[in-house]
Length: 620
Image (cartoon, rainbow, N blue to C red):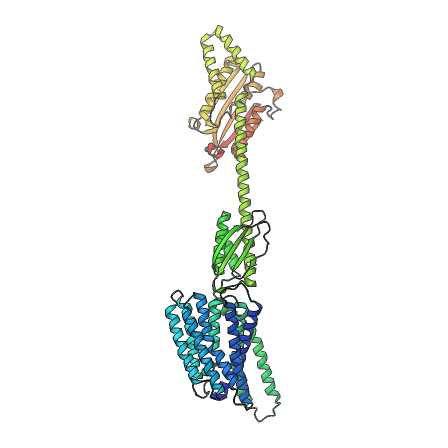
């Protein structure tokens, strides 16, 4: 295939693809028209589709006419070149909308295109060659001037945006320069660039004002179509054309030639899925720089996992979604009871509900999307997946807070109950003990006045210790002092019948324990054990450390002699022992233990095991 044939082939293929692309763009704009779109950007895109379609259709009609021997279509050519000339002002207009730029450039560009279009019409009516050389030169100079002016005057725009606009206009200027010359068609590359310079202008408009609006609907399909056409052209020029040259002497219905064409068609069809995937990757990764919607929900779930407040979860999630979707504003708000459960989208906003199990429920509002972005189906599916992950995290935070509040309330209730039990225990002074103590003191007043005074002093100390306002926790030494006053009063009553033994190391006297936790055990031992024995009995109080290292605990025991008939009844009746059990459970939970059982010698042993230290902090 010579260079002239290659150029004609490229032109025909380019015109056909141009008609397909611009027609597809026009249909998509019409179908997805948003009446709320501001500043007429939809109208500009529709105008771009119409102008591009008219340009390619006119050139295709002229090329086909030449093939049939019709050399002139002056009005069709004039209309096509006039349509091509109006694409630069559309680019300038769209740039002005995107950046609120200089309106003088837009007006100047439209006047330039009108002037060039009138020159094309004059040439067609006068029977002069179309395109008109003066019109194309005016478009060339005008496009270069507009590109330079846009680079200079659009101060607010980034270099990236400026470079896209300027590149499109400069390509158009080169195209207009070539089309206005009388050079023969001798290079398919030059012809491709010259006759398809409208496509860079259209992509410049799409990239600036509609970067996301038609990403899936147009850009991916357009690039797929271009890649498919390129593959088909390469297969024909590289394989079909050389092979068919060897069959020129065969019959026109050569089976092998037809089979080759069919095979190449099949190869082209098989290549389309790969080409479409490549186009999708180019659009998502290179052009639009979209987030990975498959991994975004997982990554966001990992980020919000360590957070422990609803506000922090919502703020982080909204921020990440705004970054991924190019939203300039985001708000987290409480959803109303009438709010729908599905994601709602509009031209420039999206409301994502967070469907928590219980109220209040929330919504994330994303607005002012960059690049004219509108959310598509895969993005909405990603948002719904993310919203469920956010809701489950908030539900778990609420459950954890509920459990903590319940545990805190239970601890408060237990503390209050323990205080009430302590107050009740302090008020539960056995009337018989008090009467017996007073009777003993009355007897000693006559028989041993000094001993009576000492006993009365001990009774006073005992009553002050049991009825006074003391902390919930006390030291083991203070508890033993209180018990000592009680036992001395009882010893004055029972005399040698009550034999007392206290085995406590001095190092343990400062250990903390609940106040009045031993006194009920000692009182129970005297009242239900030794008092019922005519010969009396032994009362032994011990304290020791058990366990090793971090598992060390303190064991307190009260052992007393008991009548044989009462040894089987070790349950421990009475409010005093029940009070001890309840207070230990309230203060220590499962870290404390209380047992009441007979030992090998036939005595009854009441045993308390508590943590070695820090009891008051555990209670708090």
